[in-house]
Amino acid sequence: MMKTKGFTIWRVLFALPMLFCLFALGFVSSDVAAGSKEPHFAMNAVKERLSELTGYSGESRGELVPAQAFQGVMATIERNYYAQPPKAEEMTYDAIRGMLGSLKDPYTRFMDPTEFKRMQEDTRGDFVGVGAQLDDATDGAKVVRPIPNSPAERAGVKAGDVIIAVDDKRLNDISLDEIVRLIRGQRGTKVKLTLRRESEEKPIEVTITRDVIESPTVDVYLEDSENKIYRIWLQNFSEKAAPMLDQALRKVKADGGKGLILDLRYNPGGLLDAAIEVVSRFVPGQKVAVIVQRKQGEQDKLYTNGRRYFERDFPVVVLVNGGSASASEIVSGALRDYKVAPLIGETTFGKGLVQTVITTSQNTAVAITTAKYLTPTGFDLNRKFDDSNEKTEGGLKPDYEVKPSEDWRMSDDHRQDDVQLQKAISVLREKIHAHKSGEGELRAQANEGR
Image 1 (cartoon, rainbow, N blue to C red):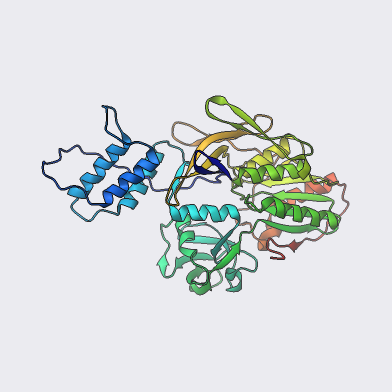
Image 2 (image 1 turned 120 degrees about the horizontal axis):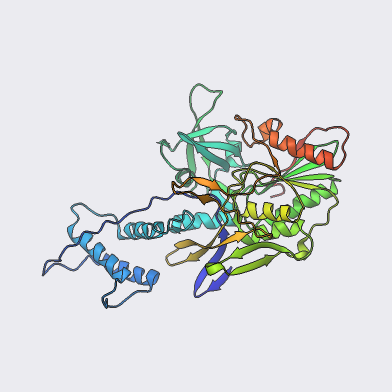
């Protein structure tokens, strides 16, 4: 971490656009009657907090002073609103979100203490919960897979289950982010999940005790035992990504691997530094890993660490899809630019923006877009939009485009139906001049030995 002007800063590449409610404040001008009471004492705390956040104080000299304008509206609400208004803290948080919303940037966002804590957990690679990877579903959250050896797996949760209620709270019209918040909690506490399972007529209820979960970062598969073709499924770019990748690469080499698939599908990104570390494992020497373009076109070239290069004598391919975003695209773009590996699958998400996380005060933070990144050859992969806000282009187009089957989902139970994976295996067989195919098996899990 770096210290800049008294703020703690992380360089973070957030994965997919997160939808937050933007609170629009409508202003109605009104004269304050003489003799009105001073605002409630809580307003003083709000003034102090706003001064901390904005740096504005003192009397207006004719121009708009944001802190004073906001304080005036808060005071008016305190005096005149017909019902009990929300707490000053809630209104302050929502006002900040509304201010950031005016930037029209889905990645710049405010994090209250709960959201900031979750972001820190995600980048560290551990959290307290039940241990299940989730995706959106129409009436809840679909379990992509339970994390190996997690409380969810031990409780019998299966890939494909849809969580439709948490502690009897129905999940219709609730965002995935909010569902995750409901499921997580204090270590040792219990949470009841109501599951819909295709093979069961009625919903299933399971009660799970929350525990510390090691985020799944790396799984290793032997996809072709005859030709020693391995797949490393890298699922995020947390602080643990590079060291766990090292462990996986050593395993592949020790087992006599002849071909490697780096699977970045549905990897939403994470830490910029982690992405550069991963590129360093595959690109020899000190090369440009990514170009960061800042305000007014200023460019910084960030280089690989030549000491981190992993010596190998086998070819590599990379699997990507529309869920491969941000840090995944940095790695994919660099490996293709340096002709280390072709890309197989679908066009990536197209998120080429860098967020800097700046802590403000009282355990809150702002993730603000400070730059965009380009691949080593200067390719700008960030998605572009037309006047109707429809995506027109963006992302990395694969060298071998392969669409998945409609009923396929990324879990251990569906590997045989994975046409993208089968194409990657086929490409590697051609590269190593394989004469016949072999069977596959899971060789190591993300939390092996932990």
